[in-house]
Length: 151
Picture 1: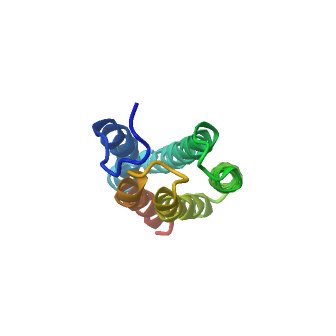
Picture 2: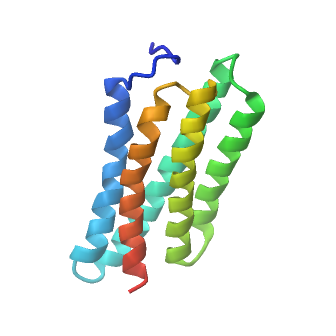
């Protein structure tokens, strides 16, 4: 088991951190490059995948709080709820551009809040280095899909 106080990013976190961001980039590219009606489906798949990732990250944060007695339970629950609710609303709203915007906001919050939590002991220490660039990859894919919905 990885030491939650070790700031080095484990190889598994690189693989399972950046790997799930790739479908968002592919979806964003597909929204621009595929023939009709595939761009619409690429955008919808990007929304669904982005929401699933955000819900998963919410669970990771809550799980760390449950498993680490030094973590702030209140902070973990609040953060988990923000991530989860953004994902839920992104799936529920009928406007694709609003869904993508909410997910991009959620990913930006993950980059900021998980980094801050890592520095205070409320998340694994390596999240301070992992989350900002990891979430940026996802935001790029979401932004590409968003730009397509606005054209």
